[in-house]
Amino acid sequence: MTRKFEGSKLLVATHNAGKLTEISEILAPHGVTVVGAGDMDLPEPEETEDTFVGNARIKAHAAAQATGLPALADDSGITIDALGGAPGVYTADWAETGNGRDFMMAMTRANDEITAMGLGAPRTAQFRCTLVIAWPDGHDEVFEGVMPGSLVWPIRGAGGFGYDPMFMPEGYDITCGEMDKAEKNKISHRGRALAQFVAGCFG
Image 1: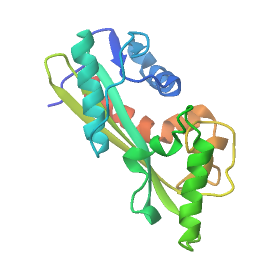
Image 2 (image 1 turned 60 degrees about the vertical axis):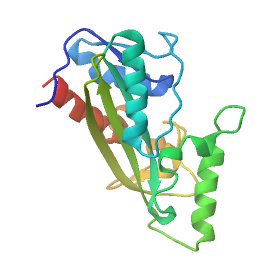
Image 3 (image 1 turned 90 degrees about the horizontal axis):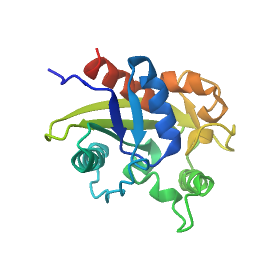
């Protein structure tokens, strides 16, 4: 039996403004105030696991222990079939420059590596999101969402963030970078994981 969320404030263990906005909008109908890790001056714990669920657990439990609030953390990324599931948990690392994140560089690397293998369409890939909500007593619940699709090149669209402009969801002829934000939220990996979270913890 999934533990229900009771209370009016949920800490989201992220310093990513885009993720925070997306989660706030989805939880707004449930009367929950969402606060980010940055608002609480929480440091970002080192993500030492090699799975999405492992890293999400590290972040959620660290935030819950530090604040005494239930904390929701996600670990998400893109898995590219031709690259054996890479970059996976290293999705953001591919964009690190030492001077902030450069996702154009990361998308170019992904395209270059696939092209070097001589692979054409469809270049299948998945956006994956694992959510963990942890309580201060150490209990947690896990929810996972997957958005299947394929990669396009050159990139299309200026919306979204991360690898969105090169990812075309299954059943669509536009990329996440070309999508209306509300439409993307309905089908996104994070949207699907959050829908399971809402059904499990608020249903």
